[in-house]
Image (cartoon, rainbow, N blue to C red):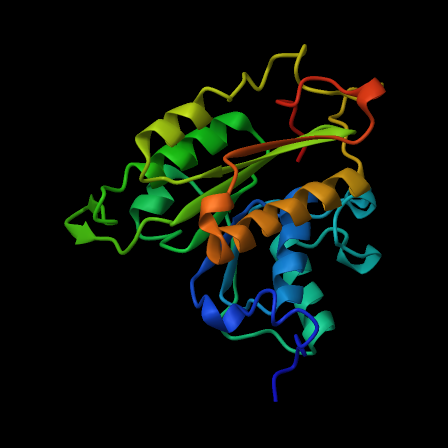
Length: 250
């Protein structure tokens, strides 16, 4: 018997019908909640990539617990799934490290769905370009090694304190890739990045939860009704306080 009983949502989304790899690059406010949502859907073929550690201020907007402070975020994710399911599925991988073009060219992040959720625009652009540059046959050549497949879909999110955006990009569609690139902003632009009075980026847990869950819904839409998939969706949860939707908080 499966550990997770999915009878309540199986008719809406049955993970057994979509045996693809799922990659979460960045396990912060959005990424950790995406991971939790995938686990609760019954998806087990998940790889989480992150090189950061859990700090006390992460507890307010991420899935981690007090006992996880000072542990790696990938360890926190592993503990989450073990607490939820009573075990860690053998098909789950927790990679303590940054995803870089070199890592991708060495055979990582292959196929399936990619949630691109790192904490800078620059890193997202570099990772996206490395994934999208895999040719139309879904392979790339590096050091005479033929890699497997390019992702079917790249989902990327932006988040401020009261608003956010979810982007869904077909990496084989050049027009879609270029349209996404045009939305990128400078990480150092203080007019766009939303900061708290103490100078750190703002991040509200309820906003992160909404954005993360909608990102997962976009993944579900891609599988069950791909023609209805929207390339960009913007959210404004409290319009009187909104700032440009390009703002990002990890």
